[in-house]
Image (cartoon, rainbow, N blue to C red; front, side, top):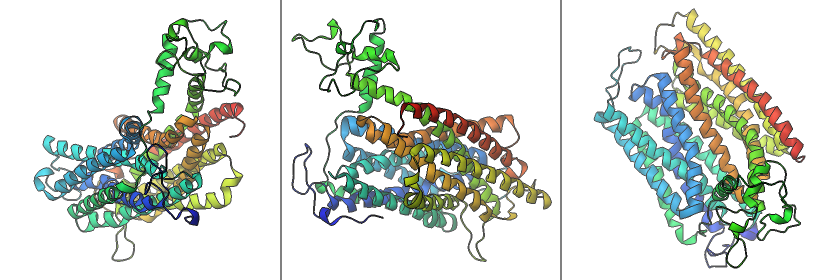
Length: 547
């Protein structure tokens, strides 16, 4: 990891309007930004990583229903960053958004801690293997969903916004790169702590204590963030770039009856753009050009033209065209996220049914198994960055990730087939809650393979979007990854529900089901999606030879 440059050890200073200002911005803000992120991420990971187990063991939710609820929550976690970024860019600024959403997270953690400690807020405990368990009441469900909604809003609203605010503290792109290196390393440390230590406390000591630790971590994160307020450079909201996209669409529809047959380049609105700098309207998606076409109705009293909901610049129109061209490639990430979401939730159910002992005295919590995927991804990112990255273009890197993901899904299907074989050999099919005499460590292999695939896939997509997105949308390009992951989790919930309703593959007792068929189905989705990706990549590469 790159060390902090000596020339930036001193406080970098600039005011809200970009002018120099004492004690504003620079490396002095790093401990506050990163420290707050550590606290908030540990809190979010502490409840999120073990949510399936909590729903099954403490709320008597059926196993498949628990995975569906969890996928919806994870989907929300990944959709909210777009909302947070929009509010920060358009209205409140990053600092206010982080403060508001982190307090929402704290309120959610308070409610989860109360749920875990007060018996009246959850159903009576259910003996392992019992077929008749008391379900949660409507009131208990309402409190639970309220707590999860607040915690999810808080986690999603701070995750990307606080990273953006941290980068805003530096003027030098190199310093911003160093910041992101340390920032994401701290993020991995937070995820590792929450996926191991806190989950162990929840499973072996008590859920109340585990959620209480998350509450304390959240509170410390807020306190550390507020302590750094006098050092932060707070950038004023400049308006969301999505407003520009909306204006182009509205203006195009408004002028849809105007003919473009006789229009010339000089008939379009360029504002302060250089006419000769390749900003003339292109022929692709030509109907959008109407948004920049000047008419008599667009002319001001003094004879000039200005941007409005009826007139946009050529650059704004071409920026939207660039987004439209890249959207098919972006959509391939949604289908990939569907398979990852299905796999990650089913792995926890598999782990719950298998022998999780590591030695005679230690049992690995089922909710901690995704940490093996995380470790594989982190190690692979380091190896790719050091030895492979310079040999691959973004499209190639993403394509390799697709292939490795398919291999991991095939491995998961074969492993589950083996687990069901052990279940049948020991006559455990109709004995829910019984531990299958097969080590859960077998799950590490396919999870690690999929982790390697993610190391190629997701960073490759981030690099591609950042490289190809228009300049006004550079900061939004990274959040697009969060958006596709969120959509993927939502769709995985719908697919899981459809499979449950139409097949016998996903009963609540997975020993009676065919999870291997679900993994095979996911692999087929992956293969079809890879073919779709190759088609999209070919057309996109024809338009841009640098990818």
